[in-house]
Length: 74
Image (cartoon, rainbow, N blue to C red):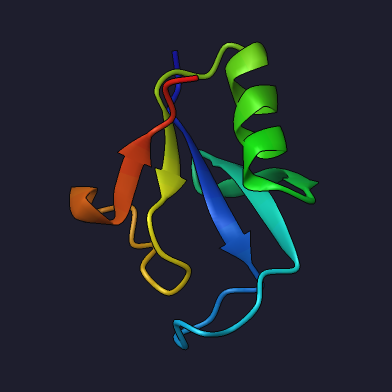
């Protein structure tokens, strides 16, 4: 199955910037937004996306760098 990434929105380079929502990104496209990271990850998992990656930090969301992500296990 295709991998899903849960990213903070809006995108920011400031580590102290607030998060308005969390986007589920598949194949480089945002497909759905949620209020919480957990809601977004649970939805992606329920849709069959695997693995589901969650951004470790607000300002580090480069999909090409594995250290920016953790696998959603719940």
